[in-house]
Amino acid sequence: MHYVGEAKLRLARVLWSELATCPEEDPQRLHAASNLTSTLYSLGRHVEAAALVRETLAVRKRCLGLEHPNTLASLNILACTMCARGKYAEAASLDRETLAMRRQVLGKEHAGTLASANNLANTLRVQGRHAEAATLHNETLAAKQHVLGMEHPDTLVSASNLAFTLYAQGLHKEAATLDRETLAIRKRVLGTQHPDTLASANNLANTLRVQGQFEEAAALLHETLEAKRRVLGAEHTDTLVSSSNLARTVHAQVFPGEAAALDRDTLAVRKRVLGEEHPGTLASASNLANSLFAEDLTDEAVRLHSDILAVRRRVLGMDHPDTLASARNLAKATNTQGQRSGNSWSRCASAESKHGSMGTIISRMSAPFCRTWKKSASTPRH
Image (cartoon, rainbow, N blue to C red; front, side):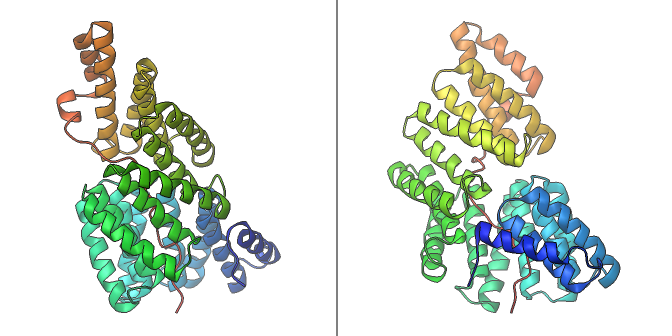
């Protein structure tokens, strides 16, 4: 029997509770810790997963050595949890370290090595380094297709992640084609309710939205959100992604009031689950500010956009696409606010002095943080 979700977590906790008092270097104890860590990660419990994997990693380094495959597996999932928590610089450093050692120890085409390449590419993408991410995803996908086969679940992970990167580069038609192909295979291979299948449905819906196919996107998102709530739970990070996407689609259909309500709900949960400064939380705050602006609540939108921009500059950096998007959003809202007060130039000048040149910030914009992508948390078994 294959357990998923909370049932799998309960079993993992029972196993860990039975072995936690064993000597820390006991192989069964380490296996139980790794099993619980992977389960926590898959359910979006990233803080708890990070704490446990740090403990396991320290023991494995001391007992097995840094280059042992099990040590590298722990290093890999630590990188995954750091990326999921929005700590991108630390995640990228860990991803590079793991990939280099796995290439040396396991070989370039080993499944674990390819998983690390996939993870590094994802981290590069969320850092805004889309071209570099796309190159690495293409290389990894080709290698997985050769080594694992076209329909292997890990191959489909790379296909989905490549589609995400194409989306981030603005190649929406290409992304939609790859999303449809991946979704069709996942439905057949994994089933319609599998989390990876639901991730592909979410991603396709989001691509349809940016292409202006709002009705199809909304119908697919409603279906996907209900399935995620049932399979993953209402507060799982992937469920919140679909909730955010549905709000964006409703907004695009000119229902800003309904969108704002969805945005507020998603933002409240993300603050509690992810933390105030997590990139996903900031994305929900940005979406809410945009909905408020569409409702002509310009002053509230300006205040929220200003707060988001300050945090994104500190957390993501000045040149990250999401930071630049926030700057553009603030410029637009501030300009509208000024026009309504009859003092557009003075307000824009004030915003420019506080947040930077408007001529620079409105020239670039990124898509919202609203697709589902996947890191490879554990080394695949053969």
